[in-house]
Image (cartoon, rainbow, N blue to C red; front, side, top):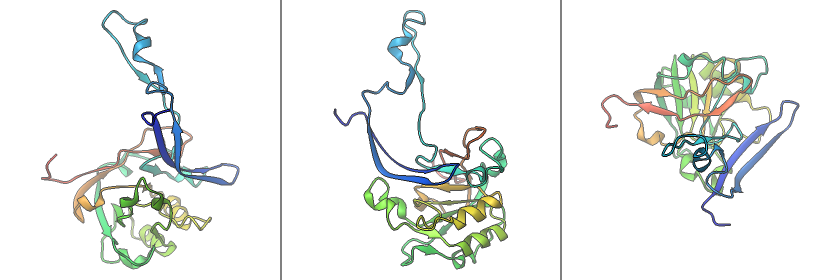
Length: 232
């Protein structure tokens, strides 16, 4: 087996009946590039006219893969899932970057957010931890928000909260107070962001919209920001 068709990913799996699993740097070797195809190009030749071919892919993955969005259903079974969260709360949000790069403390306190107007904004916490993405360091000792910071974000009316780290909570705390507070207030969470160093503190619009899937609370997103006047 060559590494041409090898994938490596991290996963956080929470079971509805209790308990959870974590995987860091999990490797899966695939037999070839078409293993995820519902209809491979070569097979499509038997279906379509000569010279016409199509590829139809297939997805089978953990929903918490890559940069992903947490909706309230992720934490609370009777709350809004991917299909129930409004597009207005996920797309074209006024963005704010709170920079805590270089902090000696893993825990990010309420004080980090005090200088800012948070009302209606996608609050993106720039820790710089994304520099470890794809390495063993990424899953160990990551920065996270404190419960007090989460309460402040809720009270100040943040629209969405994101972080460029493994988890917005301390993964050593099974109570997950930050997820619990934010999602109870209907505030979506985006984890594993990257590239926040490229954004200004304010003056941009943030987007992180997943597909509308009933009965699921998390899903990968192509999170991006639009900065007026920036080259595209």
